[in-house]
Image (tube, rainbow, N blue to C red):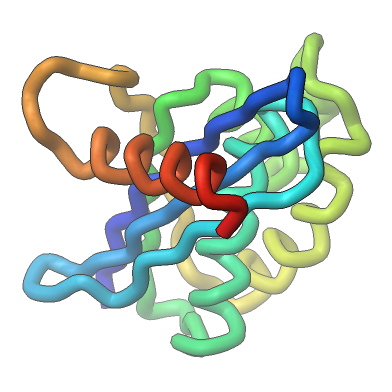
Length: 148
């Protein structure tokens, strides 16, 4: 199966709240929409959480195999670099706090161990035209506003 995933995060440091969202789809259908808020102060943590939870869903619910391809579309360059470093076993890029990504390591390892091919792509954030990244942005802000 070929999965396409859009993710985004939102944060209100003054309220110590963060939120994330993700949309998993195939070419023909929406597979899963996920979003949640939590105690947090870092936008990068929210962005990383979105990717982590999307991977967690695929590994635990869809049972990824070596025939699957997962393409992530992320608007955070730091998140893209952090996940690429985790997968390749490199040091985290400068500016990425290790405690923000440690919870992602075992989940990413579980996905990599399935043999599924994971690709991370950068998309422009907050474009004027309607797109899936903009939907993720709205969902994360909604989760943050309503403590979902």
